Length: 116
Image (tube, helix red, strand yellow):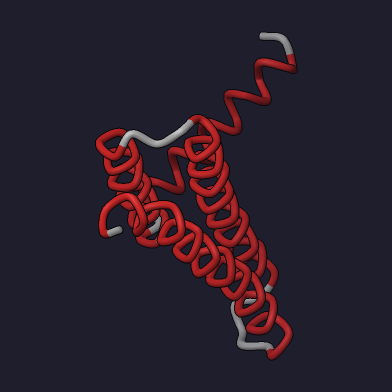
């Protein structure tokens, strides 16, 4: 298999592993399905669809990066180390910031269509 296609195989393997084994990633995939369903039923504009897709893709990608950071830190040390904990906390914080921003943007898109 060509190395280019092999890289896709590795990427898909990583995504599937994350979805199967990581609780938070399972939640984000479920939330993505709910948001995509709501988007379809609401009849979003093309621009709104692009925003939703970017937010969902970014959220899942960031959760995958967070999982990768956690795995690398766990590989490096099994003992508690303040910097190891900080690395995990920073990665989790990045996910939280993106999740909050995504929720706010989602409200900006959906609330006027549903309630106003």
